[in-house]
Length: 266
Length: 252
Ligand SMILES: Nc1ncnc2c1ncn2[C@@H]1O[C@H](COP(=O)(O)OP(=O)(O)O)[C@@H](O)[C@H]1O
Ligand SMILES: [Mg+2]
Image 1 (cartoon, rainbow over the protein chains, first blue to last red):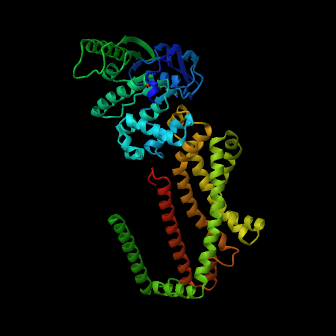
Image 2: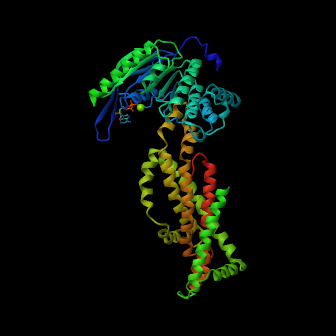
Image 3: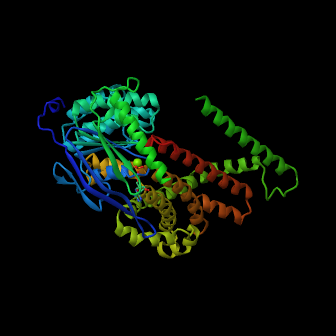
């Protein structure tokens, strides 16, 4: 676990080029959900994808995860085209997707089984992963007995335990209350600091995007496309109650864009 | 604990009420006592059947039939349900046929079962297993076919093999539905047991009901009906208890 921090050559670069995704609708029509999307996720970077509901954020993320096929362009991870679901790409879902029939540690061990470690080592690593999210003492609790925030922490531990090169998060904290969200942001950045996985973080919350990411892409609907990309350079940890000049400038810019596009289309 | 006691008290109160009303109606003289026995005469009839050894042996015979038929039907129902839910071939080959079978009640199968398997135990097992099979198949199929997509996606992106996905995700995700199917199947096993025993049996609770009819022994019929009721309720409680242990993450 610890030998990973100093692994020199970072991998996990994602190239999304000219991506288009369409869905066959029941009536026989096709819906163009996303088109002309170009995104580069540098290895070890933290990228946010912001946009109104229905603009295709999840669709892009699902394509990178290999959950949905693409209809144009390409997605490459470390220069390999994505050809299906791949354990090198971890996913954290908004609905947690913890298996309720396994305990917290059972869920983490589920992810470790592919590494075929000896049982004791697997358990030890699962415990270490839970320790990273501060839930070591809840190892044998079932998800049904955990709060939303705790569930998402277990889900984070589970995903990080399997050491993916790329981590996709689809509005992971969308169902949590404001205070829990703030705690989760700190926790996520802390754990991410240990692993330095490439992160693609989908949200419709502008502040969340600016607090977490190095780079933010703003999307618009009909079909989903990227209308603006910006860098966030200020150092972490960033706080909503101590907003920097950059934060405010970016925030205003994004708000204006989102409002402009929502008004134009509604 | 107090909750359980409370529950028990409610059940006791309700049953006492029923017995009181029953008794009042029976002694009111409104209905011929031959047709509508009092709780006391029923108790005497039960005692008599018990002392003759018939009560216990009937119970044993009927339970054995129901259990064997249930086990056969349940095993087949779970297996076929998984196959029709997870493989295209079996879905196409068996799905429509099984859906055609569903409306056919167990009683309708009794004559053909007797022709095929004779008057012995075989025909009873067949009729019971058939009913249980359909209930368990339907629920297993439904539960196994509709596993939440995020579970499958999560499992695969966590690197689970198809085998692990099946045993560690699909089966547990379908388990609550399978348990519901088994519980329903157990209740149906009783229904079809009686159907099977009403014609062509020489022992068992269903046979005893039929036999009592020939002698217009309504007291004995009541004994049989009460037996069926108690047995069915106990069995259902048993399935709820075991089911809740088995799929502890979901309240049945
Ligand atoms: N499986 C699907 N079949 C048909 N249409 C879909 C499917 N998934 C998403 N869509 C459509 O694609 C568009 C983008 O959806 P989505 O990516 O979920 O948006 P977001 O995550 O930004 O809210 C929406 O119009 C949605 O209705
Ligand atoms: Mg979405």
